[in-house]
Length: 486
Image (cartoon, rainbow, N blue to C red; front, side, top):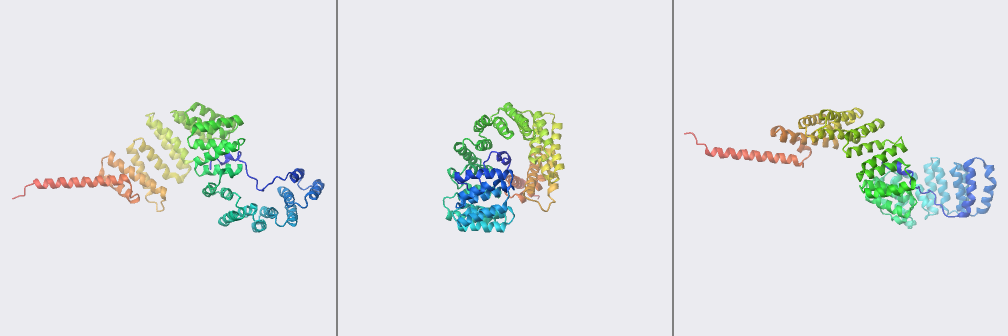
């Protein structure tokens, strides 16, 4: 997902522990937390504070567990266990004390022990979701179905808990975005907290459900007006849907709140401006994105694309080259963009030989960097050449592709698609451009073998049959007029 790193700073992560508004013990806990964070092993510094705390809350299992989590937070696991045990002694049905013991076991890489404590929490405090969630987290990799089933138990024990949202969150953490979307889509937006709502929008974006992502983001903007995460999600989704007016409106609101300080925000602002054909303004935003973060190289590619839309191929090439020089992991699609700019100059008749050679060299460079892309490079070269109506050269390239792929015994679907295109376009050139129907026949025979429903192949064979029938009819008519020898 491209937008994850960009968004993570703006997302609010839901707290793992179900914190309740117990102001009294929370307030008394704060100085203990502060002291332990500063000096985790200085027991003397917190001795009196803990003594007073315990005196006040010795019968409160929740307060004792909260103190245990304070020690947990500074990796004082033995102390955390001691306070969890005291909480259980006060109230054996308080589930979060068992969850704390499970969390300690999990941090010590004792998955089995953690699962046992989470199961204890589920048994002793069946309406408390934390045991189910802890169990699912431990088993999400080794037993995804079992983990999912554990969370689903909450439907029976705690019908008010947003189970589908939690399952969506669980699947998000397991990097199963399709499942995450499936569960989240069953949730009611008004029931989701800020973190889950933002995550739902992000999940929708990741599975290309941009309409849903925008709807969720817009709901978030209204419900949580102080959160910039939803503005960002709304901008991204609007750009993806090419709803540039909306993207501009959200971008301007975000800039008014934060200023032009985020490179990612400026890139999306620039894309929205380019979508409205405000190209100079878009380029200014992309340049500002570079100024804000010189390590972000994506603006160079966006500047290239914007100049290409303006018809300024020379500038487009300059910035595309700059982007590729700075990017050690150039994608095939980015080689295609650069070659396409050169081919645009070819189609304009601008220094055709040089620009065509440059376009072909781009694909050769891709194949040199990634040898596994050799077939793809030939395929792209042939298609670009065919698109420029340079049919004779295109035919040679298609024949090169056929020679490359036909001997392969382990062709995959992509190989067969490349091969089908080579047969189709190669056959078409010979049949329609070179007017040699007979020489085209082997191409269409091979094409129909791997693509039985190909319309051009069917058209060729129908035309061939019609020509044969017409020739036979003409021959028959001629025979009727010939006088037999006496």
